[in-house]
Length: 108
Image 1 (cartoon, rainbow, N blue to C red):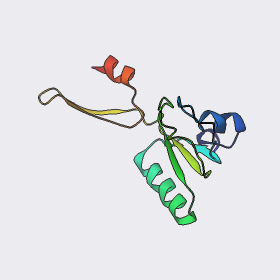
Image 2 (image 1 turned 60 degrees about the vertical axis):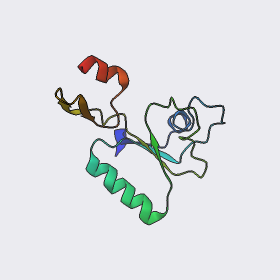
Image 3 (image 1 turned 120 degrees about the vertical axis):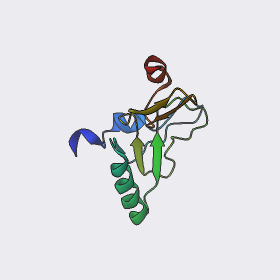
């Protein structure tokens, strides 16, 4: 609902391009899931309805991968920003997709 879904043109345009040279191609809607289960439910719904899904991280890509050239729903994963596990022994960390490089470096 409300704060987790937007069809506002400004929000759609923000999510319809990255740092590439490609023109903006906004999605039909933007959603902000906050848990894996929500992503699964949204993906299942989009699959059943044959609606394209476009994942969105920070919008810094250089290939136009966030451009919704066929419309669809943009999954903005920025609110999934937990650092789940840090293993000092094997130098590995498990993070959710919204964890940024700066946030991870601060945590480390």
